[in-house]
Image (cartoon, rainbow, N blue to C red; front, side, top):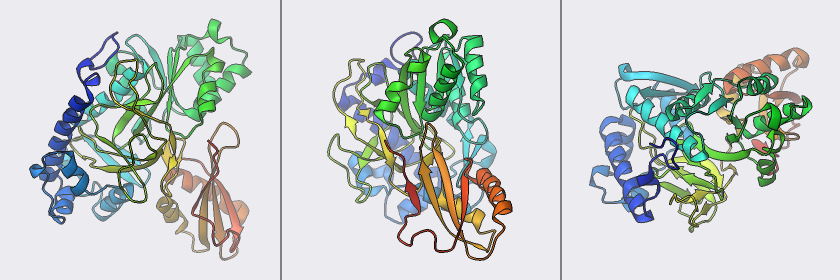
Length: 429
């Protein structure tokens, strides 16, 4: 582990590509065998296909024999076998940490698995430039979902001091940055932009009043121009990006050289055509697929993230790390949009609306007219409703279900065009 050096693990981060591929396969093969032995979900699924990963000789066996895993697979498994599903590979009494994310999905961790998972996040933060002695404001959510607490664990593993800032209260975040001389802020892209607006509105001189040197962003679609401007209100601080999922952890992180986000050298990452499932040519755009290699309680194997990347930068990086660099995320390949870092799952919305027999078809509309993503759920009613009273009630119930506050539009039946898609993502990137 690095202290003030350049690398968290110099040996693995600077291996030749062939050595890294062998390293990734060793870790992945061990996890495949573990999942087959301990998780009924994988054992039954793979046996039905005549697959036994213990006989695998290399990645080609994995690519051709292991089926993809999707979020809907995970949701269905837990709905059929609550609360953990058949994916669980340990005795429930061994679990020490549980998270509840939209779906709903329950994520369980053993003590050992949680520590290793936190180290995945710590390595990513280290690549971005966080070091011992930093003071970090974590603005991700701490309640129910993994992001806030795992960022917190990661920065403290590095040796940084952490402020558990949580979401919202942008004015207070800026006051705390000024008071305690925060050096690093972790935020979703749009919230960092909001903090920048507060700095400008308050007339704060960032070079005199703040000690901020680094902003770490992720979790939302953004343009290159948006990213480039995020550091300006804070005096031109460095902005570095991460990409990850709750299921796998931090998959890629940007170093000081830019040019994309370095893939974690422990993960075998595939880029596939989302329609065919086949690998795309080197460097081409496609959907990100990977497997976790550290979780004990609930291994995640060959997971389709649903996120589309512009591709991989395969050029050598001056920082010395030898993994390819993931280019920016373009959007979702499915009808599960990501808004403010949260997946908005249509089935969850349907569950809420099913409580009201007078409600019918709905559409999810995502837009970004200003700095923040905005979610609107358009809902048709098939019988007379009290729009003024029902609208705020639906807003509250949907917010509790999906962890994002939507705008709700109640509309007469037939208002949503028959040809309209379930998701209308109007964000321009």
